[in-house]
Length: 576
Image (tube, rainbow, N blue to C red; front, top):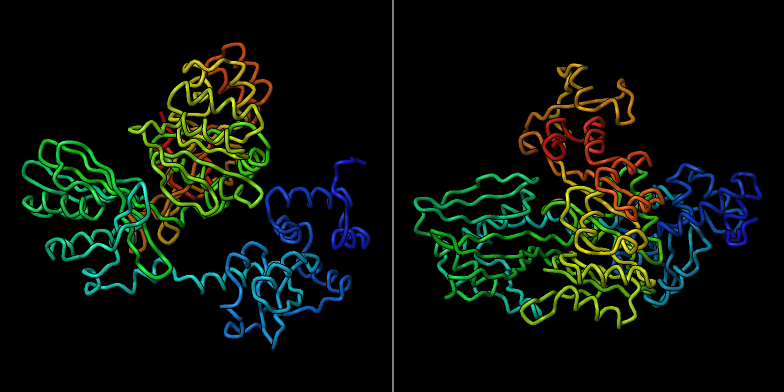
């Protein structure tokens, strides 16, 4: 028996003793659940190793904990103000009833005494467990949290034209906390209302960027939605200067300076529970200042890895790399390919009380509670390299470097990865193999690259087909499918289901949202040898393919074959 294997106790031991679960499978489930930071019972159910009803019945008999039917739970009976939502999410529990000084808490595993103790400490009342089925508990927690936190749509739906003047908009100082609320009277009322409406419309449509663009005889406003720019308004050209001035006031820039680019931030509070940040940049052009706002929704950093579009094997590779005590994970792709969201998702998985996590970013896009985030400022000498040096003096466990731009930063990051730290960073390259050769071309010694880089993720974002209006693509001949590469994606031709975009009232020209397309490559011994021997990116790509790592093209075609995106979109984001 493996001496490092986890000991069986509690519910796992009872399931093995009853012949419901093999001992080796039980040990593997305990280990995997710990790696993925999910409860043991939830892991058994999601992996279909046992059904939730059987687990609940056995646990009730073993520990004498009463069974509770969540289907009979009335929403109004939940003491929703008593237990913090973070505790509910952290421990996967749900308070269902309070009687006197006793709080009954629904659990799927009654051995989770730490959860009950922490809830008791935070509420000041005695806690008693009631046993429920894991799948019903997960659904009930989702319903409860969704009901508690006002959705973005509800928050925006409550705003009408009468609210445009009085929106709670704050300028955010990059070197300090939010400034006082901006007085809407600081500018002309029509300009204030128009800009506020543009900001709200951009959030409602799910835009990622807003472009205010002046030209010689025209002025336009465009939104980037699902990665595609679309014209949304054409205000009179004589308003361009005043709109730029208003945006600069809102983001605490120097309104008198029009000759050099400026950066700022805006925070729009759209409800008591929801705020959206905008990163603002101005650029002097031939006919005035172009202003671009990047919309930063904190919710995008907490979507969870399952929402990003990784295939099962890719997700496992990512999770395994995150659970290593040291090494370097590199995320690569062009601007706007979702690298930041992938990094933040990884950091959220790693973010526990036991870990010291520091990040150096330029700029800090979304604030993450419990993580030490540093805003790089080259003007005062606070570079990525200097930030990284300081991190290593502060006993870090995990370090995130926003981007490796030069040899100095690369060398310090690699040194950190080789000395017991997990390092996450990004590079601007087109594929995973090119990332390795880019480091070599920077001047990093081949041995250091081969021994420090553990995982590379290259990614793109493809527009997701609207599930309401997409139509089957029955007009694509078999020879075209062969020419496109569908014979190499590991899916039988009969199982390939391609669709065309159509367009309806619920989407944008047949697409709604985006899905990630990934190339996830682990640094295998064969790849490491190629690096040491000076192999080029084509040789490394071939080795990765032979090891079973799908490249971006295959991943995109698989997304199309699964009906998530169209062949046209797969070609747009990955075809050379």
